[in-house]
Length: 310
Image (cartoon, rainbow, N blue to C red; front, side, top):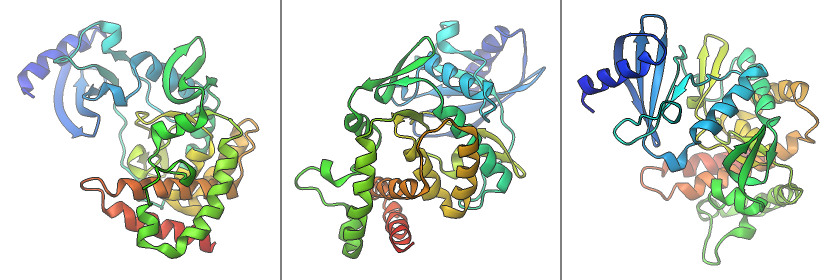
């Protein structure tokens, strides 16, 4: 990307806010977008250029979701401007402008207690968004987010690869079972609980990918939960299981205590969250077959062993 042309674009964008850019710089590139920082004469922003719009929330959905969470005390950054509002794309790509969150990603599995509490409260706010249906968010109607399907299994498979054995193709064997056959029986027993809960059809909107790179912390405070590109209408235990998978049961207990205190009665249970974390491990094991993802298999198998032995 030509830096001079981006600087002109940044100036045109900030002009909508009555501000002037003082500095721009490239920050990062991910699977779906590129991120630039823009410092104006008044504040600092990140401008996210979306390279894969099909894999991210559209502008109205993203703004609605993050404003809902923020209004209820959740730690997120709310967009202040977007391409759909202004009507100008960057080289044919949509974009969003939002305040720059200053902080660092915490180490995996080592979340300070205040971060755990804030994450639990933020997930509680997220899970209180009114929803209808399952799967990828399709549109927002009034104050309700509608999913792409009415089928909970179809919605689940829009997000996770091969999480439940009853939905596997006939010739599919999980890489986790191929690598560690001894975990198969215990895994199936736990996943029966997951399948029974999924059949109860209790959707919320889940972030669904709560690893440490999605958390920005300033010391022992959570500044923001970021990247809702994988948000999906699912059972809330998928988020709780994600916390266990990425951060361990000790951190999960603190997150869950804050979640339970802040959320409406969702019928969530720690043992079910642990079972869902095993389904998430199978997802990562399945994705270990993709180029550059082989490291996920060892982590997935180790997690399943730990949950079975608990």
